[in-house]
Length: 150
Image (cartoon, rainbow, N blue to C red):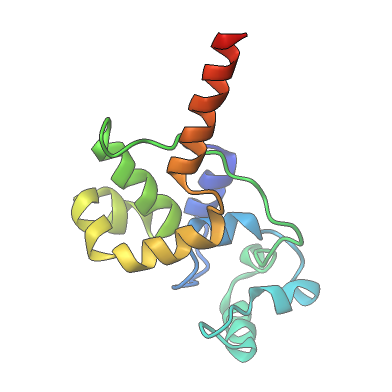
């Protein structure tokens, strides 16, 4: 679950309150002017607010804007039935916006955080997970059954 991209995300100081980890790592690190349109998220922040945030950043942080292409983030896909702790942790980290992993995520009860923010997590999950977990699981089982028959 941890990789270079998530480490980059966690170490950044830019404050985008309503941007989750997939939004951030999927569009990160492009140059300021060409990417300013991509950082303006509908109904969340305005273009003027983005310019203001960039002006408040120090020189080292000004390159942190957005990527031109989305990236694929691989994750384990824990099942709530078999490993509930990691299931809740995975969903909270991937689909819930946060600014400080240590204080907002790691020191809390993942299950409580998951259910307290269930609607946000489900909304964000629906943006990125086009194929539902059970559909993918059923397809894998069907493929295994076909393989065993042959």
